Length: 326
Image: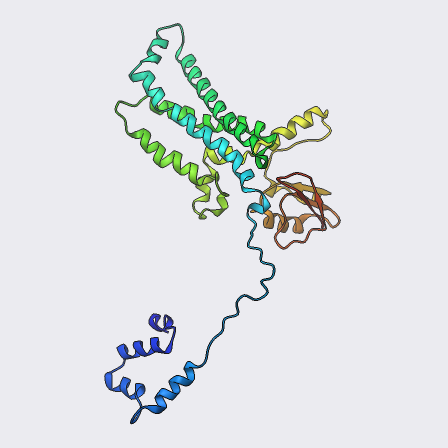
């Protein structure tokens, strides 16, 4: 079937295509009728009385236009750590550009410091400490605003501040070193903003999961400092290590690849992941976990996997525990 015929929506459309394609004598033979063409008109009228009625507005007594994204996590809750990390990144990267260049070229503040007993690494440490302070002020300011909003009010905001500062500091050293070598006027700062900072801000998982990006772009997002600042993966590990130490070693904590771990050795597996890997997790658990063992997920269900039990946590952000007996 040609593309023109595929785009035909009526007999008239087909007639126009035939008129362009067929020799005139052939077209007239099929298109016309004899004498006053009464039979031809009757045929057209007969087909014209046939109507295709689409099936619409059926059972609309209870319409629910809502949808679920991020596994049921409130978007503002998803956005909260990203706002802190991205703010620290932007503030610290700005501090590492023109102010550092200013200290070398115009007010020559670094030259004055070098004339004192301060050593070069003392000056560099002071600059890094100031950048960390600026990152802390920026992240703490965002945390205060988020604490005012009920949907994002959480003690986790305090724990997220250090990681936001570390995110900013990932940009402090490299950009400061680059700024110290620049002549004036310099156009590279605009390029850094345009081709590094802004793309990271938009595509490193601050506003949506990186799983929404094209497949080839996801590995690029994974290696950016902002992605790791948003993900906060070290936070649960660090908190668990501290609790293990406080309990006198009642339990152990390990850092490793979850997907490489054999789940057959555990009676209970508790996970707190995200919506994207849940289907993969279910396949792994079904394959490896022993009959009678328990898989517990906080906040995120398995697509198509009916849980054996659901428990309310009383929390706003992750209100449900899903339990499956394997």
